[in-house]
Image 1 (spheres, rainbow, N blue to C red):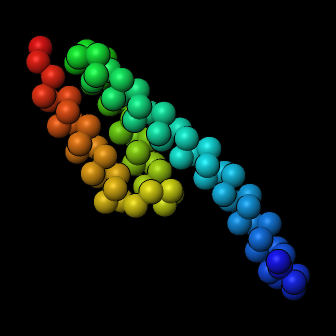
Image 2: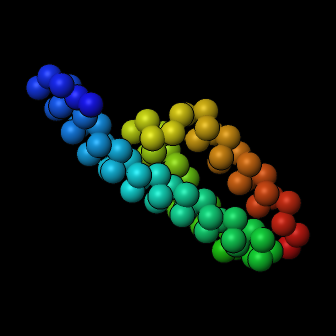
Image 3: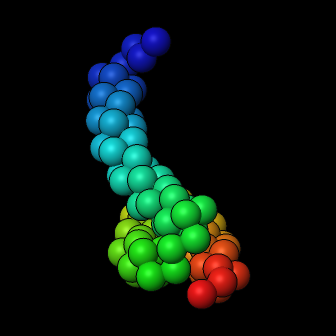
Length: 88
Protein backbone atom coordinates (compact mmCIF):
# COMPACT_ATOMS: atom_id res chain seq x y z
CA UNK A 1 0.00 0.00 0.00
CA UNK A 2 1.16 3.53 -0.77
CA UNK A 3 2.50 5.29 2.31
CA UNK A 4 3.96 8.63 1.30
CA UNK A 5 2.03 11.44 -0.34
CA UNK A 6 4.07 11.00 -3.49
CA UNK A 7 3.38 7.28 -3.74
CA UNK A 8 -0.35 7.83 -3.11
CA UNK A 9 -0.46 10.36 -5.92
CA UNK A 10 1.45 8.05 -8.26
CA UNK A 11 -1.02 5.25 -7.43
CA UNK A 12 -3.94 7.57 -8.28
CA UNK A 13 -2.31 8.61 -11.53
CA UNK A 14 -1.54 5.02 -12.48
CA UNK A 15 -5.16 3.99 -11.88
CA UNK A 16 -6.58 6.85 -13.96
CA UNK A 17 -4.13 6.10 -16.78
CA UNK A 18 -5.00 2.41 -16.63
CA UNK A 19 -8.70 3.20 -17.07
CA UNK A 20 -7.99 5.62 -19.91
CA UNK A 21 -5.71 3.17 -21.70
CA UNK A 22 -8.24 0.34 -21.28
CA UNK A 23 -10.76 2.32 -23.32
CA UNK A 24 -8.19 3.04 -26.01
CA UNK A 25 -7.13 -0.62 -26.11
CA UNK A 26 -10.78 -1.66 -26.45
CA UNK A 27 -11.23 0.69 -29.42
CA UNK A 28 -8.13 -0.82 -31.04
CA UNK A 29 -9.30 -4.39 -30.55
CA UNK A 30 -12.78 -3.58 -31.84
CA UNK A 31 -11.40 -2.05 -35.04
CA UNK A 32 -9.21 -5.12 -35.63
CA UNK A 33 -12.14 -7.47 -35.00
CA UNK A 34 -14.25 -5.63 -37.59
CA UNK A 35 -11.61 -6.32 -40.20
CA UNK A 36 -11.30 -9.97 -39.18
CA UNK A 37 -15.07 -10.40 -39.28
CA UNK A 38 -15.22 -9.08 -42.85
CA UNK A 39 -12.30 -11.33 -43.81
CA UNK A 40 -13.97 -14.42 -42.37
CA UNK A 41 -17.15 -13.53 -44.32
CA UNK A 42 -15.01 -13.40 -47.49
CA UNK A 43 -16.15 -9.81 -48.19
CA UNK A 44 -13.11 -8.15 -49.70
CA UNK A 45 -14.65 -4.68 -50.15
CA UNK A 46 -15.96 -4.54 -46.58
CA UNK A 47 -12.65 -5.87 -45.27
CA UNK A 48 -10.74 -3.22 -47.22
CA UNK A 49 -12.97 -0.43 -45.88
CA UNK A 50 -12.66 -1.73 -42.33
CA UNK A 51 -8.89 -2.01 -42.78
CA UNK A 52 -8.67 1.59 -44.00
CA UNK A 53 -10.58 2.67 -40.90
CA UNK A 54 -8.45 0.51 -38.59
CA UNK A 55 -5.00 1.61 -39.81
CA UNK A 56 -5.18 5.18 -38.40
CA UNK A 57 -6.46 3.81 -35.08
CA UNK A 58 -3.60 1.31 -34.89
CA UNK A 59 -1.07 4.03 -35.74
CA UNK A 60 -2.57 6.40 -33.19
CA UNK A 61 -2.37 3.78 -30.44
CA UNK A 62 1.27 3.13 -31.32
CA UNK A 63 1.92 6.86 -31.17
CA UNK A 64 0.35 7.05 -27.73
CA UNK A 65 2.37 4.00 -26.67
CA UNK A 66 -0.68 1.87 -25.93
CA UNK A 67 1.00 -0.72 -28.13
CA UNK A 68 4.56 -0.91 -29.44
CA UNK A 69 5.25 0.48 -32.92
CA UNK A 70 6.49 -2.91 -34.13
CA UNK A 71 3.29 -4.54 -32.94
CA UNK A 72 1.31 -1.94 -34.87
CA UNK A 73 3.30 -2.73 -38.00
CA UNK A 74 2.80 -6.44 -37.44
CA UNK A 75 -0.98 -6.05 -37.01
CA UNK A 76 -1.30 -3.98 -40.19
CA UNK A 77 0.88 -6.35 -42.17
CA UNK A 78 -1.03 -9.46 -41.11
CA UNK A 79 -4.41 -7.89 -41.80
CA UNK A 80 -3.30 -6.66 -45.24
CA UNK A 81 -1.96 -10.12 -46.05
CA UNK A 82 -5.24 -11.78 -45.06
CA UNK A 83 -7.25 -9.31 -47.14
CA UNK A 84 -5.01 -9.99 -50.13
CA UNK A 85 -5.71 -13.74 -49.85
CA UNK A 86 -9.48 -13.28 -50.17
CA UNK A 87 -10.61 -14.49 -53.58
CA UNK A 88 -12.66 -12.02 -55.57
